[in-house]
Image 1 (tube, rainbow over the protein chains, first blue to last red):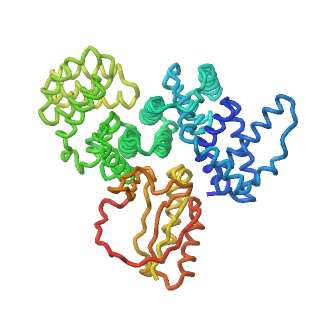
Image 2: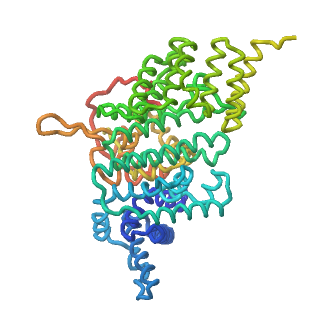
Image 3: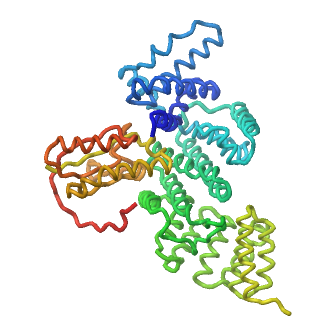
Length: 417
Length: 129
């Protein structure tokens, strides 16, 4: 790694805390971003010669704040501040002061920075784009490639989203306990959205697959500042477990490989072990929530050496718990799949029959239904369900996967001559 | 003398490495370790998971407290450790310098002599990464 590559990594790592502090200070996202940008430029100019400061984040906040004040003063035609040399060479004493000033607030600074990206008026894709731009510091071009749009279109989209956030008014007062916990829930959902975008679009577009790593970084960051929150442990564990299968869920031809057909020896044990450690920690709190339960289900798959070792009994129980804390027809559908492993396809088909109306527009529902019917020997009905699934498929890979199922139908029932 | 060599670094930066950057650094670190391992001087080497996976047990007033997170909230955290049998401190310093040279993430290696409290008989099935 070169010096510059290393400095860039350090700047990316410092970004959420430094930008969060600058946002609190200037109360304006554009000014804060410009100030941070300026501090980064100075870091690239001065760090290679002088060596990185002991605390890069405090340095960036200090330098950013001065350059931001400078910019604001210039705009109001006042005297400029001294040259950068005056403050690029911070003594430890100054760093400590900057440090103390900001450490008291840094948790809420980072949370606020994440939270403003989750404005309820912003559609999911804009929340994702804004979080990746503002919190993660991805370039507009990187984000544009992931969403398969041009740079200028993405630039416009982000500018519009920012304007909307600014108009809504950023909440600057330190949140109370209830409000902080509400923000945590909303930010967790945003991180999950970022991951899912990478997970689903990443099948065909490697640029969006990088979102999964970004989501995991954001999850670790959130847990680092709120280390005692079991639902954040659950969220991070869930992301790590899903990501541990990234290398095996698509084959060389770009086809979807189902969980039961994946090469388990190629699952990333490092990610799995970290997830299991997090889940153990979360369970000690005895405050189950949807992310913890989903992670626990995913962990049971990770723990099974072969598909037939899967503890479907426990998985069915956990889906039951999830139905209880977060009822949704999709959860019931997943529970039905687990039940089919224990009691056969007929029992599962009976469970999903009442969901038909609510999930009629959902690809996965028809795919599962077709699969269960295929197992139950109801070939004509299965074909109908698969046809419906193909019509609703979200990607060519999903389409191809259902076609394979239809081919299986063909193989068992040769066409009548 | 037996030395524990403790690697400290800024966690955020190290966990911002891409897979390729990480693999490149690990390959170089293994290159440094191999001759020491072949000479029978290198004991277990551990890489610590992120501090978010850590739990701390601290002496409480009555019962010990179990807390989420690392022991102390510091900028630099312990990321991994080596155990080395070296003739002299110089040898341990030289080894650490080689590690440091190929690891852009490390900001310091603490060299701390230790004695064997228990040799251990851990089975390594779960611990390989």
